[in-house]
Length: 204
Length: 379
Image (cartoon, rainbow over all chains, first blue to last red):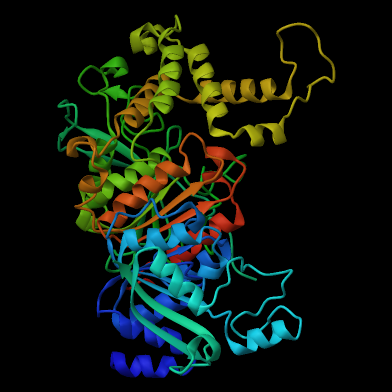
């Protein structure tokens, strides 16, 4: 199966993974921060022959990664990426983990130190359904933010506009930005109509 | 239920080597013996062999028992066997006693053919590199061109690491557990105190105590007691002994009053009765001298540039003698070289000793990693 077919097949259930794959060069060296069970890296390895490493804190996820044949380094992202040389990766990925980081500024800076490019994806808090739930007086619970307020790993939720400003203020250039709602690309009023934000970043 | 059993009854074998071995020190061992054990079956294309390297006080008797009546099995029995993490249904496992040892391989307490007497102080100082060279010759003798894996904890992990540098083509996977790329000054300091305890024992006779029909028991005992303190964490000692009194009361003397003292004395006595002091000196020196980065201006990444193996590096949170930070140095150097590497930092209370414990998560890590190792034509 060609890589394009592979991506197409997989993209039926993870459009965001397919987009990340499309942003990568074939055979590139990638670091996936908070790689979970290694699903994304496994997809990128099979579709793009990515030379990948995952970083994961959780014991159970670590075991699954090893079962999946993923190179996985057990460490806490909050401690930074001091175990990685500057500019030693083509791309550093933070897939739907940004909102759970305590030290957001530091991790994004570290990603751009270690990688020539960073890919960051996060659930858009400005999505209209989230806003609607807030107007109705409740903290949003949705497919992309599936946690009750009292039991959530998320500590730094933001909107697309917030993150655009963040990049501007931190001298980060947005190479590309894509916004999705349930796998569909959103071009019109993305901060209102988009549920998942995807960014390609590099240092200015 | 998943099969999980011991390898059963085993017997050691001896390999003789008549080709001289030039050691790192420049000294030459004209001939030597290595005692070893194997578990499982070597497959047709000899691609399923795993070498287990022992640490300071270990030996070739890794798993199983010699007799049904043996009180204890081999030192890493919980790892090796049918259905165990290092599964002998798939792998052919080799345990070997290192040169300079005291369990059957040529060492200070074995007979020097040139004199007909124990080598004693004349037995050369051996290094991790020398051990790996001698292990490679054992692999040659067994007809094994390439090892599926080399696995070791502590000083054993150093050997696994050295294998990837000395024989990059002959090792597919290195499992480096609770180890370090070299010893820190503090770590070497413990070794020096241990050696001083032995060498200042009046029964040491400059290492030739065999001729005097004695052994430096007191020194070896203290060396071992010191070692045991450093292999445990403060928390583990606290949990195991705390301030418990053996007889429930303070006696205002210097006998065994606290449980901890009883434990240390027991461990020291047991060890002094079965281990050779000259071997202990050499094992600690091998630890001290191991420093693959030294020949590369202290650059561990450069030292590992030759390595081709895939790596699993494991450390334990409470291990202060071989701390996780030291394992992370190895991981960093491997990442610099774009080697395939996974790293697990196991939350464990047992300190350095944790690498020998059957902690379920730790064993799952080893099991998962080892399961993915290709054994070619293995059944």
